[in-house]
Image (cartoon, rainbow, N blue to C red; front, side, top):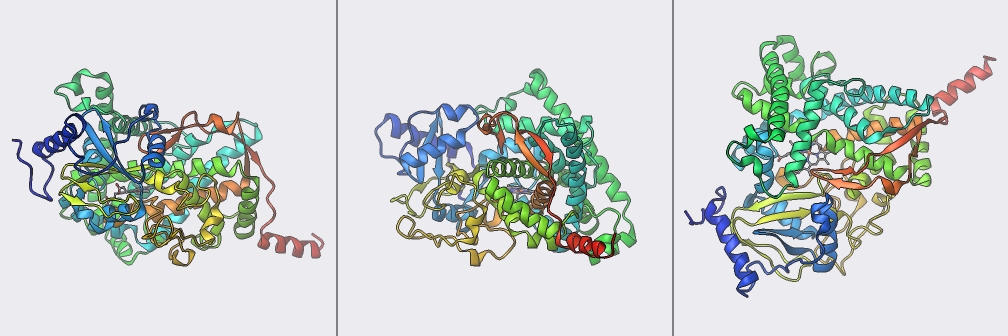
Length: 541
Ligand code: HEM
């Protein structure tokens, strides 16, 4: 049973034992380190208080871009260099699976794309990616606007009564409403009401976060599901959501309408009553997919695409509200392009600064701040700026610190400053990063800067084969909501910005909520509105 498994196959007990033995030999037996990585030691309070990514940043400054962390018997190699990370995520991605992350998420997402083993992943990725095609995304832009408009109306009321509110909560609600409609045509309507299903979604998310920061997987212990109240509740919440998803899948299967099918095939979304991803997956690709697999896919997208987008908006508003100069420029752009209409794709294209603010929020507060991998074979990493080629052994757990990458002053000058205009300026640092191609605005081919233009120094959606499938969806969504918000409101902090704090599980949340008071602003009129005004005045109206 102590035999190590074949390269590329799932990790076995023998592989785990081998990694453990090597660590013990290094620490207690004075054997040379098998990987060559320095051992990070020192103050570890942030490792357990919900800000582990900040602790890993301190270690990065002290130990460099490749170091080893030990938590009791477990060890992690932490990576923070763009060239090395590119190797893991893209060039040699077949040498890894999702390891620990898959173990945590499997009870919730089953064989959905995020935790899926490489075999299942290949089949489902091929089925799901085409669903996020250009015409569908364009169609979604109007859904983003409609759902954000409900939020605007709620804020109008709060502004009129000068009532403060937790904006983080509201952003979670609006992104839940959007993902529910977009993925399986379910009206959560959580901006305006509460329901047991909404409560269940939040509780399951909380449990997933709790598991991602709990070192001992007590939920796997025999009978724990029956005797631990927290786990009983988790099971009950999961059942509530699964029942809803099962019903929606069943309904979608029996209500295939031939005319809708034609329109779906021709991508005439304006004519289709229900243009959700579920319809696409069932109607056009669903014949040989089991209901359980579809449910795992939907659950994965519900969880992956909800709090992440809410966090982008939360941190964008947090930063913009502290930078009057940036806010004025953004509002001038929104006033000029948008007037008071709900944004179209063309408007989004014209609002570069709003788009780059979404990107800047993702750079400063990447969601999740760490990516997790487990090596499936023995191999060496490129040297990058580490100065040595780390030897990765099969079974070794890896943390890719996106937070470290995005806050590295040698990759991003003034990394702690919210500066959406940085994406207009090229930056290269051959002295510190000779193998890194730099950031080049001319290489931003889509609407948002990404890993291509930054040669893997910017990875808000990961990179390589397992890159996020919802990247465009999420960035367009956040741009619509942010633009509508800035057009109508200014926000005052309740208390000080420093009170907001950070806390992380899967995403970076605030520690104490983002409590703000919305104030209705009087926007400068749009060029169209101004022209109409002038004409009316000329007519003596
Ligand atoms: C994967 C971030 C929104 C669905 C990922 C990954 C990241 C990420 C970093 C890569 C994980 C890894 O390599 O381990 C984000 C952020 C979002 C967002 C920051 C919002 C701002 C969405 C949305 C959806 C979605 C809206 C779906 C509607 C997925 C899926 C995967 C994924 C299915 C797994 C892809 C695969 O393994 O093939 N996301 N995501 N995400 N995301 Fe997103």
